Amino acid sequence: MKFNFRAAPLAAVLAVTTLSAAAAEIPAQKLDPALNARLPEAIKAAGAIKNCVIGSFSPYTITRADKSIEGAAMDITKALSEVLGVKIETTKIAGHSATMLGLKSGRYDVSTEPVGDYPDREANYDFVDYVREFVVFAVKKGNPHNIRSLADTCGLKVSVMAAGSAERVIKEQSKVCVKEGKKPVTVLSFEGQAAPAMALSSGRADAFFSSQAPLTYFVAQSGGKLELAAVGEKNGFDDIYQGAVVMKGNPLAPVLLDAFKVLFENGTYKAVMEKWNLDYNEVEAPGLNLATAKKN
Image (cartoon, rainbow, N blue to C red):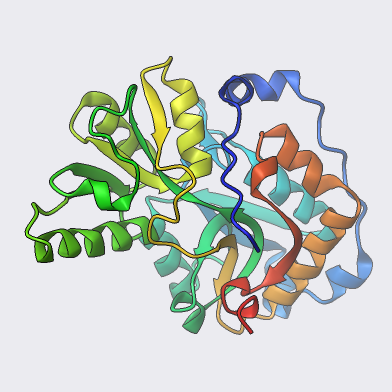
C-alpha cells in the first residue's frame, strides 16, 4: 500500500468535539448467529468480551468529563457487540504497556482501540487490523525549530507516548544524532496521549511525535497555537497498520476479523470513519497481522 499523507482538514476535525450531538447515529447491527456460535467457550461462559482502552487516543477514544468514552473505536466496538450478540465490557487503563500486560495476564480479552501492528509484536499478539496510520510531529505554530523530518530533532525535547513505537523510533534517532556528533534528543515519555500533548502546549517539549490521527485532533483543538510538521515523510516507519489486538493464537481473532468484514461490507465501517473525519486512515478491507501479511 502506498503512503497517503493527506492531512485531515482542521475545520472538519474541530467538529469532532460536537459529533455526539450533530452526527447521525451509526445504525444498529443485525446479530450474526454463525459468528455468535464461533465465540470461544470462555467468552460464552462469561457472557461478555473484556475490552480495554487507554481512552485518550483521540479521535478513536476520547474520555469525556463524565468519564464516558466516545470515539471511532467505541462506535466500532458497539457495532461489533451487536454483530456478535455478546456484551463488550470496556475498561479504561493507564497506557499502552498496561494494554499489552492486561492481555498477557488474561485480565482482558482484547483491546479494540487501534494498536500498532509490527512484526516483532506479532510474535506474541495477533492483530485484526482495520486502520492505517502515519507518524508525524505536532509543533508550535510556525514550526520554530524547523522540523521537516525525523533527522531535524537532534538537540530537541520530544514528547511521546510511553512504550509505543514512536518512543522506540525517536530513541533510535537520538543515537543517530550522537553518532553524527550532534546533541541527543531529550525523549519525554508519558502514559497515554493527553500528557505528551500537554507537554508541547506548555512548552516543556519542542515537539510531540505520534500518530497523525490524534495529532491532527490535538492541533485542531489548540486554537491555532499548534500545527503538524514532517507530514509526507516516513519518519522512521514503513507502512503502518493498526487494529484490535489479542494474545497470539486466541480463537477470538478470526471471529473478530469476520465481524469486521460484516461492518466493512454493510457500510458501517465507512460511516464511522467519516463521522470522526478518519477517511484518510481507512483500509480497503480488514486483515489479520497485516504488518507481515502484506510483505509475503
